[in-house]
Length: 468
Image (cartoon, rainbow, N blue to C red; front, side, top):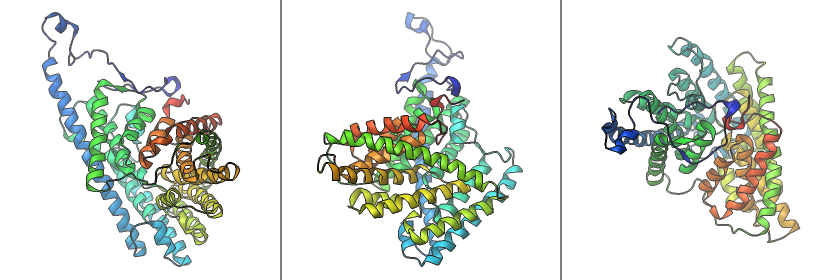
């Protein structure tokens, strides 16, 4: 059954329950007459076989998505090595460079990434789908499986150049885009109906997120909260199978650990009070970050070509990195440091401010990449500073700055996506700090309320918000 598109103006509340479907008109479901001993409708006997085939296809999509995530990471490493002679942490690479290289490499990377976009758009315009990029979430909401091959490849190539040369954006966004695109090719090559092919796109999105963030449940919740609004009984099992198979491949063959391993921090009674403060602060900062990206983007749009925009963005990020090299990349290594090592508040505040500025410049210039992962660093820094302040006022009663950093990550994610359920599940899966569920829930609820209350458009255009 084809998933009906959501009307953003009339979207209902989110529910994680599996909704029953109406009996299909084409006779592929079990009819009421079968329960009375009468003959089943034509095709009813094929339903278990078709379901099994869809589940197997979903498992294949999960494996393809996980493989694409691993390959994309290796390609980023290759670009980084070609540009700098180093591989691994982009922050470590920046710290090992003289200041002039920190400026030159992002500038050249931005110019090349912009040229790829510029000429890639001309190449795409000559293709059958034209130069219009079709976002995978928009396609999923419409129940479609059709993405633009040429624009997807162009954007992926541009993202590799930007991310591999130090742009302050996340690599995970392009990873999920590629995973979703490859899932549509699996759908095209298999003998499936249109509704089933659309379901495989949803599977690819969930699997890509699960593989990129080591968070399989969050991948399912993401498509539930941001793409579909609900799961029918025909889409629930394939999405779960795809997410599980992708994450299993990552866990057993690549990285058998959470994305952010850290010591276990206890839940203290004061943790909830600190979560209130973290939620309010993160909600306001998330709202400011979203608005800042839009204003910066409008300023960069005054430049005529993508190469000029991305080149200037790379130059400005490079200049910021002369003083604070930690702004390079998606922020993964800095977040890992905050979650595992005690850090002075001055160092955290400096990186927080510099990362916000660098992310505004990279995202505003139009560099292809995600803002979700850099927002995790902003949230971790915000929570960490709140935790330090709380320890000064009430020592040993609020849970510590590392626990507050976890809460801040989730709160910031809720603020910029307006998807609090995804934020809660994703951060708990990425850190393994399930004992902090209560403060994370409180902070996400408040951050979402504060950010949404100001009316800023969220990342991913949440259809559940009912935005006209």
